Picture 1 (cartoon, one colour):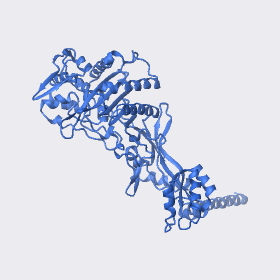
Picture 2: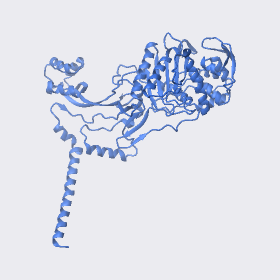
Picture 3: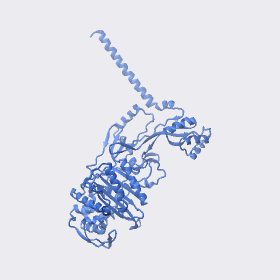
Picture 4: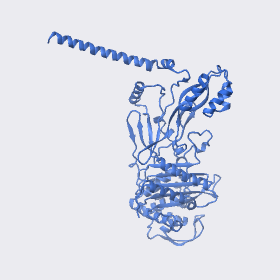
Length: 572
C-alpha cells in the first residue's frame, strides 16, 4: 500500500471518529436541555402572558365507528386555556376587567370578584376550558392583568349520546380517572403517564420505549367501539320518544348483531350529558341495561317454548290444551292477561295471544332439572362478560325450588329477574342457530407502541338449543309478529321474528303493584338470517297497560331505518 493511501485511510478514520464524537455530544446536550433541565429552560422561554402548564392532562380517545369504517370521536381531548389572577398584585379596575373578559366568553361574576378579594393568594383560577381563539383575544385585550395557562380537558363531541356506555372521568379523592362506563372499564389503557406539554419526539420516544419493555404495565392506547354513531343517534330518538310519550320511570334498548355480539347501539333514559354532569342525578350515571335486573314478562315465553321443544318435553305440532282463562297451581291461581279463556289452543296460539295459562301447561311438561339445565345454557344464571363495569347478577333463586308455582311463574317471565343484557344474550340464541354470543361494545384497541388488539367473540358462545329448534321458534315468532294488530304492523317484504312482554313490577313490601308494569319487546330480522336483534323496555309507563301499545311502533321505525341504512334485501 502506498504512503498516500495510508494517510487517506488515517484521515478518514479521524473524520469518522470526530463525527461519532460530535454526534455523541449533540445527543448528550439534547438530553441535558430537554430532559434533565427542560423545566428551567422552558421557564426562561415562556411568554409574558401565557404561562405553560406542566404535566398537562392527557388521555386516550374512544371512537365510534360508522358502517363504512369512518371513525367518529366519542371521547377525546380539547386544547385551550384556563384563566387565573394574582389577587395580591392586582390593582386595576375590577368592573372594567370583568366586562372585557365577559364580552369574550361568559364569566361567573361572583367567582371572579371573590377571587380578586383573596389578597392572601398569588394564584386563583377564575375560568376553565377557554377556547384557543377566545384565549388569544383575552391575551390581546387584557394583557398582564390576568394570566392564561395552557390546558387540555376531556370532551364528548356527541354530548350525551351513549352516555352510560362511555361514562366520564372525575375525581374520587385525589384520583382523577374514569368513573363509569368505558372510561372506567379501560382506565388502564386510556390513562397516560404525566406528559409534559412541551415533550418532543425524543422524549416521547424514550417514554414509549420504557412502557414497551415494562411487562407489568398495561399499554397505553385508544379504544375503538362497535357503536355506530348514526344508529345510536337514531335509536336514542326512539327511546326518548317512548320515555316522553308515556312519562316512564326509565326506558332503554340495545341493537346487537346476534351472531357476533357486536352492539351497534345502547341507550337509556333518563340520561346525562358527559360534558356537563355536575347537576345530573347520580342514578343516571349507572347503565341500567347492564347494572339493573328486572322481571321481563312475556318475552321469556319464546325461551321456555324453545327449551320445551328442544328437550322433547312437548311436540309443538300436536300439543293442545283447553284454555278456561285461569289455572290453579297449588293454592295460587294464574290468569291470562285479560282473564278470558280461548277454548282449545295449540302452541302457536299460546305465543300469538301470549297466554299465561298455556305457558303454565307447557312448563308442567318440563322436568325441573331440565328447566334448570336449559336456563344455564341460555346464560340466565351467569354474567354475560360484557366489557362494561358492574354487571348485575340474575336473581334466580327460584330455580333452586321444587315448588310448581315457581316454575309456573317463570314460564311467563315472573319470579326471575335478569339484566336486560342477560335477556338479550338469551334471545340472541333464538336468532343465532341456538348459539349464544358474548355482547360487547369494544372491537379493537390501538396501542401507542404501534401494536393493536382486535376482539373476536364468535367462538365464545354456547349451544343453548339445536339449530332446528332455533329455526322452528323463529317461524313461530314470525307468525306472532305478522298477527300483531291484524297484520297492520308487519313489513310485507321482510320476515321479522318478534314478541312483546308485559310484567308486573314487584313491590319491595311484598307482592306486586297492581298498577305498575314493565313493558318489553324484542325482534330480529331478517328472521332466518338475522343481522340485527332489537331489544326495548320501558319501566312504569303511565296511562297504558300493554307493550303492544308502547313499543311496537318504535321497533318498526327502528327496523325500517336499519333496513334502509344497511340496504338489506327483502327476504320474502
